[in-house]
Image (cartoon, rainbow, N blue to C red; front, side, top):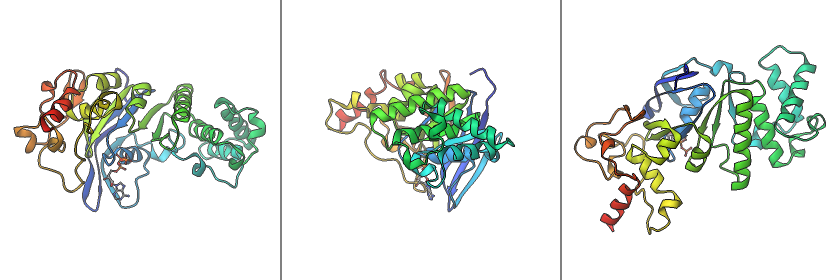
Length: 322
Ligand SMILES: Nc1ncnc2c1ncn2[C@@H]1O[C@H](COP(=O)(O)OP(=O)(O)OP(=O)(O)O)[C@@H](O)[C@H]1O
């Protein structure tokens, strides 16, 4: 990507009680791009997203750098799209007042102007009769309108970076698509980049420019989303793809056997080796570093040996074990 990065993360490490759960992660975020962070539960996706916002949970210690550090300008240059629209809004203040307060928290603008921006933001996300609705309380909004209101809140100050951590997990498929489309449209409207944490490869396919695949707190693969999803270079990415219903339909067993290692109980070498059909030799004693490969980064000693299509790797493994 030609542009100067908006944010550069270098050697990010996050630990609890001395046990590292994010283990030396480096990546950039470019202006206006959608970067999806994917991987199984526990991979460190949420903590990475929270580190960008300067919102790590109590007890976490972090080293490494995020430059520039936008966390002091949270709400203005970087903003969180909350997961749960209801709890993100205060029940005791009208929605428009909450949006106006978000404006005034980062800029000295007169109340009237903040109020006008709040109404414009509600209008922009498609809330009908926004001037009147701005005076309503969250409980007077439907679920869909609340969702719209929190997206308006996240984008009202036109941040450079939006961070959305599984923004649609609690929603059914139809609502999920609506919220993601609205988020995509609003991101475009304010010109922000989006860091999108998700389990859902369909969401990545549809909405992301680049995909950062994480496994056991490390970068496994990073590259253009369509390339990563159609021709993965890392066996772990291939395993995630092999688990999709479109590939798994005709099989009796889940196609990515096993579970990720617990933090603090990592195998020697590559953390994915115990689940990897290609693991051999150095995989069991040397953890692979992310290296450039075909215009991407991949952390695998054997990426060049992946079959095409890569999901065949897991089909073969299944036949061998059944
Ligand atoms: N507050 C905490 N205290 C202790 N350990 C934590 C805490 N938060 C996260 N962890 C541990 O850090 C690791 C990474 O957590 P993280 O939430 O970033 O994973 P994730 O990839 O986002 O998973 P999920 O998809 O389930 O949200 C996990 O092993 C988790 O147990």
